[in-house]
Amino acid sequence: MPVKLDWKRERRWLASFGLALAAAGLVRYSTQGEWTRLSEILLIGGGVLFLAGLVLSYRDMVAFFSVRSSRLGANALTITLLVVVVLGLVNFLGYRHHKRLDLTSEKLYTLSDESKRTVAGLKKDVDIIRFARTPDAAFKDLANEYANAGTHVHYREIDPQEKPDVARQYNVTHMNDVVVSAGAHNETLSGTGEQDVTNAIIKVTRDTVKNICFVEGHGEKSLADSQQDGLEGGDKALKGEGYDTKSVNLVTSGSVPADCNVLVDAGPKQSLFPQEVGFISNYLDGGGRALLLLDPETDPKVDTILQSWNIALGSNVVIDASGVGRLFGTGPAVPLVVDYGSSPITQNFTGTMTFFNLARTVSIADKNKSEPEGIELLKTSPRSFTVPNLKTNEVRYDPAKDQAGPLSLGVAAERHSGSGDNSKSARLVVIGNSAFASNQWEGLQRNGDLFLNTVNWLAQDEDLISVRPKNPTNRRVILTETQQRELFFASMIFLPGLVVISGALIWLRRR
Image (tube, rainbow, N blue to C red; front, side, top):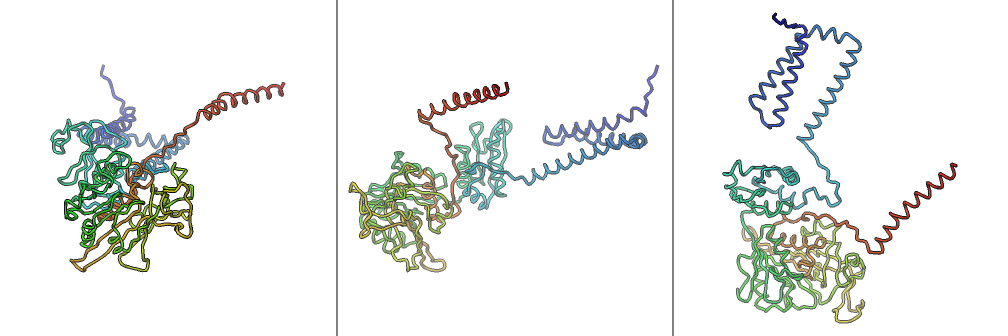
């Protein structure tokens, strides 16, 4: 017996079936990430069946909505659909114009000033490519921060097993390698932190590499020294920003090498020879740039250079009597600086601190002179003063011989000569301490930033001057044995006992 179809009944399900097919097409597209022929057939066919079902069921729909309860249900459905549409629109706008809030005190999940400045100044496209089979959500968020900070940065993930030719193109040898690429320059990251990415961007986008030359031969701090008094940390930081570093002996070289973009003399313990002082003077007269870190209780014999640059080097030791250093485990012979001069070197230092273990004064000799242009960078607290040396058991301020704070610990000066194509701009920075840049002190507060920013300014790389990426504050609470016992007694005995006694008293009163 043949089965007869009741089209009046079956057409009621036509719209539902078409809606289900359309939904299946959308789900398939969302999971695969691309339109396929099957997804298109499901979506288009489902849409046609849905519309056909509505047309064929027109009279039934009119009769259904003429009932009051149906109208109320339809209103509720309409409101629900409107809410869904509004939420979808908000989600779409959030995706296209998203904004993240970083609520950490150090802004750990926001790009630092250095990174933003680096990305904003890009003139060429930079690709950040992660070669892996599985995504890394944390690194993807970081890479997207770079992409959002500038239009020239792009991020993508590639499976090296699916595309081995691309992996070979970028010399990828390990799974999860991250490569930063700009044109023909590629850099494989050694880490996946913000500083690693920013340093790589700087390296691949710079057309020339500048040399930072460190003077040796007079007991200066060494680039290869990993001990507390060495400069290994500063050396790595400079190389991370795209510089080359090397040591030079002015006596054997007979002059400042021509390829030195910046000359650094970090803490000479013995005096320089007159010929060496002449080499440095000639280098500066020719438009060179130099950084002199001169510790107290030494005589580097560079007076002729400093006099020509209107800089006064004090024969003293600065004492900080404010007592603030005790909060950081330092003594009065470690001046703390929170007051900075108006210079690109320290423009982002407001509200931060730098420390100088054994420092001498460095100031502008004649403040009425306009040439060379000089800025006193670092000012100590008003409760600081100078003493001739630290050879006495008791350090006291003598108004007749000593200077009272605030005291200047460093000067940045610039001198212009010539005009037109022959114009030259020489720069000199003198700081009365070298320990702040050493391995022991460069990680404290903004000491490392001061050293790097000074070299950046001297090398005329002002786009790199900033505050570097932050590290999370150590908020661990370390308790003594006595404090641990007190905490145990309060939490395990006193408070529970108080609750039990209170409950007993309430129970007795209610009886």
